[in-house]
Amino acid sequence: MMAAGKAATIDGSVMVARSCDALGDYAQQVLAVPRRKHGSDEKLRFGLSEGIEIAQVPETYAYLGVISVVEGEDIHTAQGGINEFQVCAGASSGGVISKRAEAVCPRMRTSIGDYRMTLVLERCKTAREGIKMIGELTDRYGARTDNYIVGDPNEVWLYEEFRGHLWVAARVPDDCFVVEANTCRIGEVNSNDSKNFMGSKDLLTFAVDNGLREPGSREPFNVMKTYSAQNEKVKQGIPVPAYDTRRIWRGISLLSPSTNLDPQEPVETYPLFVKPDTKLGPRDFLKIFSDHYQGTEFDPYGVNSDEYAPAVPRGTLDLWDDPTRRTSTAGSHFQLNGKLQYEMAPVWGTERIIGTTAAVTTWCAQLRSSMPNPIGGLLWTGLAEGATSPHVPFYSGMTKTTKAYTVGSQKCEPLPTEVLSGSIYDEESAYWTFRQISNLVNLFYTATKEEVVPVWRNWEEELFRLQPSIEKVALDLFQKNPRMAEEYITNFSNMKATEALEIAKSIITRLHTIIAHCNSPL
Image (tube, rainbow, N blue to C red):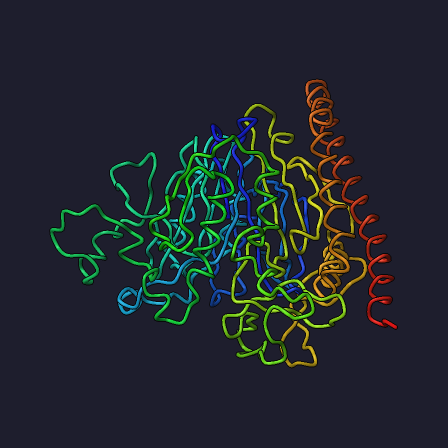
């Protein structure tokens, strides 16, 4: 996850971005969810949270979101989205807590997890309000080590939690950005500075009462050093810095090269909030989502100078080391794009690159106070892997999305491997169309990457050039009739979403032709 304050961006927008990793069958939909009224006795049940239910509010807000739809559930998980007030929410798995903290912090089976992101979109008018609500839900139902970023056109917050009911949040300075990579990053906090920090009431006292901090200590209270396992990860068998530290180093280094960070330093030495060398735009965040440390010694595609040898040996990894967890990182190895055009097998490496093939969505939100909310909120949305997929501009004021983007739900039907499937392939689904491209490129990387990646990046560049004129028309229409403006941006976004699918299908045709040729050499 990444975010930037309004003084750190080219156009004064607050930006929020996220790459969501999962197994490739975790299909996503892009939905324009309308405002809805609810009955006074209506309850909201969370299917994955020990039967927890809460009272529904009288009315939920409209939002545009990337949604993981599970059939039969009352509420679905928003992987990212923007609501009608330009509140944006994104989530990721958080950091590992220390053994000392783990011994005294209970595991909370009642936590409602990432459903909190959907609730932020449905119920909150500001980012600060969103963080407070997340905190209140954590106080009541517990934490499960999640990270969240919540923004609006004026400010953006980073939220981290541990276990029990412990959580902390820090406001990103307006002139800075933040990079988060499945770890704990918030260090020193000042509980008296409510403008820039929030947290559970017992964040400090719990540490003292349970032996995590010396009573009467005059040292500044550092949340990360108190609760996280950042310095213990190697001992626990978690690959550091290859898993999280490297991604933080790389993100900061690309956005602010003058920091001149050492890629081998422990994560806590990296600054949390950083001023960019030049002001940022959505291109900058989206580019990072396709990064594999190219040009550095950590590039896994350059680990072997023999172009006919794979990055690491294949055929020895058990993908399903624990079928109940459905993990895809067995043995601390991570899937990369296939290196050889004549090999039908994935390549594995020990570096967890940013531009991972495991991404099921990558997106960047622009939140702009200079425009009416329906036009000011813009979600540049990619489905499937970041490098091989297009990022379609979906405006928060859209009233509907085209049908293909509303197909693809989690059916939980068994596969021959006896592992439950998140979703079943559906040729009508936009997600599965873009996933096809990722799958094919990952199998025949050398022969196919140039047929895909430049096509999408050039397509996106044309959209960035077109954006000012589209928004000028939308703003003119909004002054005359807001509904006309909503219809205009709905039609524009859906037209580009459909265009992306048409291009994708032509790419798939080309890829199959190339692969047929490469897979049957003379």
